[in-house]
Length: 487
Ligand code: BG6
Image (cartoon, rainbow, N blue to C red):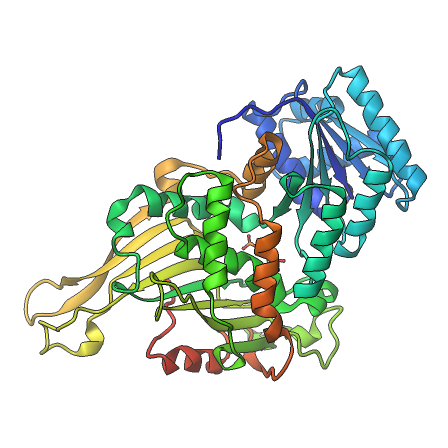
């Protein structure tokens, strides 16, 4: 999270002609350029991929992608593509193809008088990552007189052993300090603001513990289904796709202790301590669901099993709700409920901190149901902000209470927020690992969830357009709680 300048470097995207490059990476890079953070003299972008599209073809493809992403300053846009974007095919990724890439990169470095600083962004299917890193090594690209950083996209393995194996493979070629594992949730401005909120505002910190907090609920609800990603999703499911990474990152940011400083090592070490303190999660405390079809206004929304690429008898979960117990002094006895799913009624990413009720009730004569607990709702999507909810007296007689909130809307107060990828790419370029996932974090998270991937798993159907299976309500009710549904 430093203010460092971007040093001159080569930004190489391996697998550059895919969806991720066009939808996320190029718009983020262009936006960084727009803010004056990237300049031609400090960053050259090299696309490397299978197609023989040539430099001109790649530039045009990128230009059209950026237009689709909303930029219409065509002359400037085209000039940027021509100046900054380069392309070299790596065909199927044979040794000689990577050697050709190495020759190409070195020539560019010489022509532009660049130091040998290189970022390799692997925008590749997970099973091709180990071979790509081996090829980069064989071509001598991982050794340089400058620095080399390698960026990886999730998934980092599909269970504990595969994650451990992947990390061992990567560490054979590069050091952990060169590895940037992306979890795009960490790049979201509101997640970073959670750190600021907690550690810059002592009034909240003094409430942030088992004495004051009844339970914490982390919801990542998506209104969409699996769309065109059925084949991938079928292998993953919600636990691997969302819980092991995004929701767990959110949980550790909410629950971590105050770090000794605001640098990567200190923050990552506190987050890891949270993970290490979580008790094994049992099948009794986890509910899996799968969306089934839904009729609305004469239309049928397909169920998961009707999605393209999904077998008709699939029992892959599109929904998970679970209870985690962080067994440390701060949180012992406070359930952390995590919940995520596809085809919910609306998109909502929210951390709800539910405070304990008053020890004795002054307003005894009122209907107990009308006295709501204090809540802090931290919303990440669709809008970003905080709501601190409390009871106030409704005007007049009879004496009644109603629930209201102090609200802070990030965008209204502070304007447009940067995209997660923009933040993360800039951090890679300046060498700040604070918002990236360490090897130990990935493995520890997998160790926690791997037992839930097998064993006695029932996957309950829920109708698309609802908040998940009834069994998930029963899970929280068993502990005397209810799901919080936004404000
Ligand atoms: C991705 C998952 O990591 O996150 C997708 O693979 C999911 O399945 C997406 O839809 C959600 O991201 P966001 O930023 O839209 O909440």
